[in-house]
Amino acid sequence: MPAPQIILDLVDRFERNVEAYTSGHYNETQLRREFLDPFFKALGWDVANEQGHAEAYKDVIHEDAIKIGGATKAPDYCFQIGGTRKFFLEAKKPSVNLKDDTSPAFQLRRYAWSAKLSLSILTDFEEFAIYDCRSKPNQGDKPSIARIHYFTYKQHAVHWDEIVAIFSKDAIFKGSFDKFAEGKGRRGTAAVDQAFLEDISEWRKDIAQNLVGC
Image 1 (cartoon, rainbow, N blue to C red):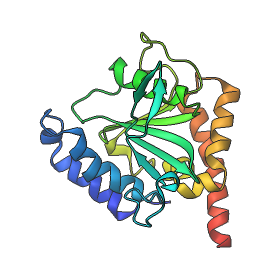
Image 2 (image 1 turned 45 degrees about the vertical axis):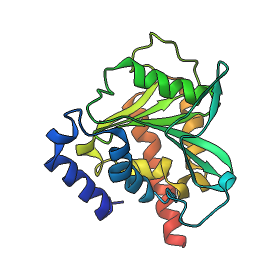
Image 3 (image 1 turned 90 degrees about the horizontal axis):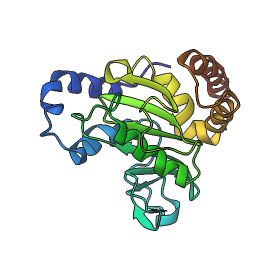
Image 4 (image 1 turned 90 degrees about the vertical axis):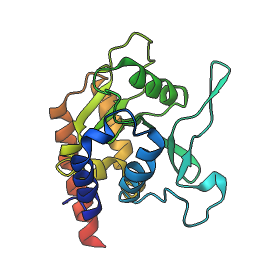
């Protein structure tokens, strides 16, 4: 399915101001409000709790609290269904190099592994990475370890249907998120883009059939 206009607009805005966003002065809070919140709202998530759900049943918990080694940590976003966590999203400001820096990937994987989550996302909008978080992370792991998929903001529109097929609220309700995670588990953590695309083609068909039936 084509990316909605809001995603195209976000990509265009980022492209026009990329030097300012990646300079280091543009902080994570600004990124979350101006880019990530609308991005995931377009995926069907009630990011700002506009429906007024009770705390335990919000779609999105901002800075969720989890215990790691006796300390309380706070993943930037926790996406949940009916109070059950499904995946974390850890955000970084665009000046951070997510592809090559080890710390952001370790942080995300540590959060998700501790919470027993199968998949989670690391992004600064400029870069978007999906991780299989079922293997225990080690401090010295390369950022490519357990990384299922990686692309940049210029490819958000191209990969939009893939993102929708796994991380939209509707896809989670229909089981596509869990099916994808199970498939990655059978292959192990050394998944490659080709396998990702093969899985996605099946999820696309399922979602298209469901939409026709609506």
